[in-house]
Image (cartoon, rainbow, N blue to C red; front, side, top):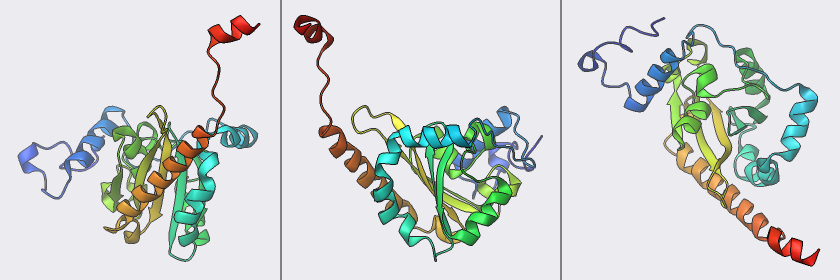
Length: 216
């Protein structure tokens, strides 16, 4: 199914306002045969399993940092913050309460998979797919149900291994993609990664297996 007349038109016929990274994400979404008029993120954990998974997830250790730098400022600003894992599963959502209720209508809720493979172009899913911060505004979303929303997201990396641990997303109206939102979120992610690094430095080092065998 075609998403719009220009998404598969010859390159020189496409409106110049369509950013290349958005167009490429649309194309990946089309190749996955996603329906731009139907939104059905997967839920693969029940409530108890989700609670246990969140307790064990590394990002749970930096929630106070994320709350003080990002979430605490969203309650009266018409924005919400979502924290997802490396697969795009939303683990925590907080912020403006009225907006959270509205977001439930498009299943932007804890436990839902908002990876690019599941819902098409969105800030949290596409940030993970590209492994860098991104802003997606309005009709740049692949799914038309999400067109009233805009969002900014930045991946979080393990400071020791460099692997992606998850993503932090700010969702709302136009303010969610203001010029200042991306650098502010990047700074918050840097602070969270620094906190993880400090925690890792305080962890006891595991003895090499060979030494354990000698002492046994």
